[in-house]
Image 1 (cartoon, rainbow, N blue to C red):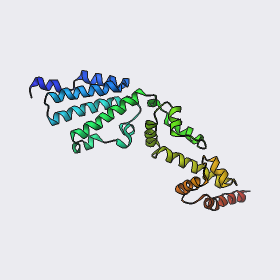
Image 2 (cartoon, helix red, strand yellow):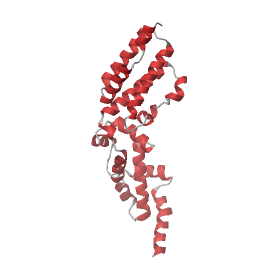
Image 3 (cartoon, rainbow, N blue to C red):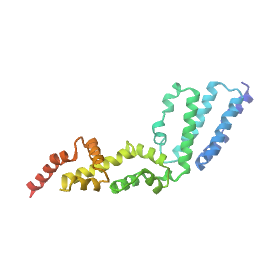
Image 4 (spheres, rainbow, N blue to C red):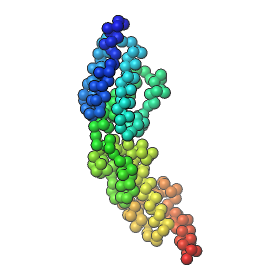
Length: 233
């Protein structure tokens, strides 16, 4: 390859600045077009496999710079689709590498363009914990906090370590345990206070998280709790 051809395929500082600024602006369509132009122009020069690979990694580095300007990591941004490129790059072919980088660039661009980049996850968690008895669907939360359902679902899963539905279920059952330990409310009343509309659903969920049904839990822990209170009196 001649020096002039090498210069044509190189990802220069102007290319990087344009891509960086367009990603920060959140213009997804422009970013997609820009990457296609950079890659297609390079391919047309007849660059080799390794040189094309190097080009992809330079684009990856630009995406990393954009991500670092925000309070998020690549792992959180990508969720289950995250790949440690530094460690696995030698095992990836060019097509696989490019598809991952395209996805990363798209997610970083969308993140920078949307109000969800300013999401206060602790605030959302507090809202869930305070309103667990209400019908707080993920769609309602997404609308409340001005983001997409898909993005919110992924970001909350990374934050909680489990899916939103799983987290809400755990919160509700923890409160149900407290009612069983500290009150004489009926199981049906506790069920309603904890956001369940079906007794069967409540009992299944309780057994899933507590390992036993509500009546058994009360027999074991409720009596003990009341006995402790009586002893103190």
